[in-house]
Amino acid sequence: MKFSDIYGLERVKERLLRAAESGRVSHAYLFEGIRGVGKMTVARAFASALVCEHPSGGESCGVCHGCVMCDAGSHPDVRVVENSLYGVEKKTNILAAETIRAMKKEIYLKPYTADRKIYIIPNADTMTEQAQNSLLKILEEPPAYCVLILLCENSGSLLPTVMSRVVKLSFPPISASDTAECLQKKFGADPKRAALFARMSGGSIGRAAELFGDGDFLKTRDDLANYFLRLVSERGSVAMYDFSKYLKGTKSRSDRVFEITEALLRDIMLICHGKAASEAANADCAELLTDICGKITPQISTEFIEIFDKYRRFADQKVNYNMTVHCMVMEWWERTHDRDYRNKI
Image 1 (cartoon, rainbow, N blue to C red):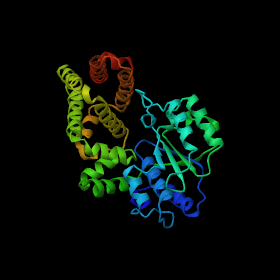
Image 2: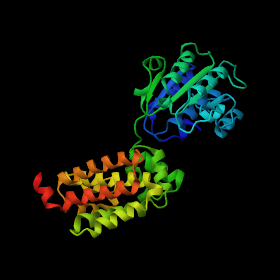
Image 3: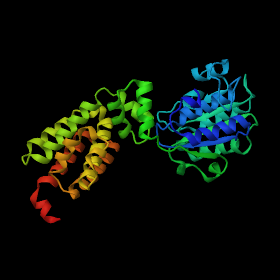
Image 4: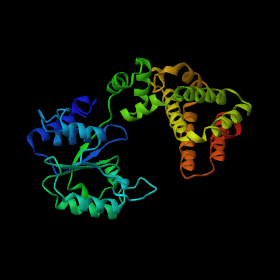
């Protein structure tokens, strides 16, 4: 992986290129940004530049033995620190203190083939205080050849003592144009779909790629939008029960359905409050969204979001899924059609 292969993040790449070229590399970095923005990709590109046998201008050559091993994930001096790497059995993604302690024992062994050893630590913000304190001992007395790269979405969960010993690099969201270009060139998306998924990605190329790879995404999105239109159009309860039945049948992929629902509801709310439908994330179904917005008030559109957020929390807390989605749809219907409720507000 080379920096030149990465879309966006120009300031971050430029800073790391200068560090690699000059040799003034910090012993520890913190990469902070949303999931899928490219933190791991940049970390691997930086690691490749640091173990490359023939680097140029801070960039790896991409063809030497070190680069080939790094790209294959088999370089002995480039480690991605996960619980499974050291045989620590954990059922969660939380980075265990035992994992950090095992890494600490290994880190003081000199590099095998390169001049440096690079340890990439994903989900660093999931570390317990005990794990962070164990890591702190390495940050205070790091070997001269070692580079730690911590990846996180929210640095607020890291101890101040850890933060004070790392170079923090913030990863901004990727522009829609760069995301769309990446989808077209790397994943073969047509321009129309690339633009749609880029808008919906929230600046995350990883998320855009996930959406593009979901063959049911567009059908699910269109189904949901049509159920919303029926819900706000039909006064009888049949539309409500049909919508509820549909959502009950999506339990196996509820995370994706909730993600799509949230995007639709936010578009509906923004259009109801004056945003052009052509600027919505789901702009390709602007006519349908406009029809929905024409049947509810801006206040109701805001309440729809509030109801969704409440019941999504219930779902996250493992409350009965069928009951959760049924009550959610029933409250949406009530906000739209129950005159007694409307009169109370």
